[in-house]
Image (tube, rainbow, N blue to C red):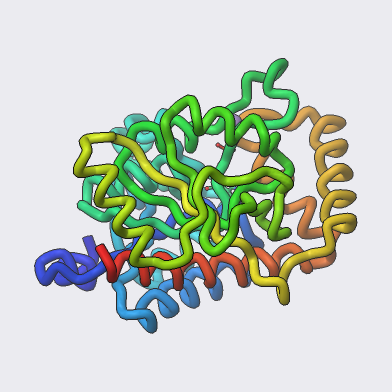
Amino acid sequence: MSEEVMTAIEEFKPLVALESTIISHGMPYPQNYETAIRIQNIVRENNAVPATIAIINGMIKVGLDNKDLEFLSKENNKILKASRRDLPAIISQKLNAATTVSATMICAELAGIKIFATGGIGGVHRNAKNTFDISSDLTELGNTNVAVISAGVKSILDIGLTLEYLETLGVPVIGYKTKNFPAFYTQDSGFEVSYRIDSALEIAKLLKTKWELGLKGGVLIGNPISQEYSIDKKIIDKAIEEALLKAEEKRITGKDITPFLLSEINNITQGKSLEANIQLVLSNATLAAEIARNM
Ligand code: PSU
Ligand code: MN
């Protein structure tokens, strides 16, 4: 743990966990580095302590310094992508990895951090009935006691099946100030959440109630992108279709598919999707800090 995180834990200050896959495999350099710094600062400005998580030389680090962030941003060819299944090998073999939502939740729980902000989570991929590609982020949400604040999921996934799967796993899905489950670049996926909650305090109460009841597992909070930064649905849908087609042509599968699609969509939209991505993460970090302060 960094000194900042260690002190925060000792002094019972509110903490917000942040993931690193978004840095290494979700955005290009140098925007990834700049964004990583900005997210941490926005958490601090909102009176909470940021804890960005990654595995450096086989060590789980909770709270990264700028050197770590630069390494994760610049040398992303040397950085693995760690989900739950990858942690044993990466740690025992002293490798470097960025943590996905699932691995970040595990590390956050080990450090005693309950609130975690990200951009979008993984989910059930389109055509999962043939590929079986369902992100371990979902099973993690069913198991690990950490709340994830996201802007929903991208329509690179099958959003309807993702929500069904979360229901099966008993994961509450909350809409912050909305009844619509957000679709990352757009405010409305066309699917509804089970509960709309309008304040960070009420969300904190729900989290405490869940865990006091002994209901293990996380909660997914959908915080829609602000209108100002959202992308026209037609434009983003077209970009996603194009990216999915290219992934199929190139036979990209498994853990490489999400990073591939993100980078393609960024190219197709000429950086518009990246700007949206940055803004929504900042907004999620702000809400996460507010929830953490109310816990
Ligand atoms: N979705 C995004 N941006 C991301 C990811 C997902 O919009 O950066 C990353 C997150 O780290 C998430 C991971 O946990 O991808 C999911 O990967 P997979 O689909 O391979 O499980
Ligand atoms: Mn997958």
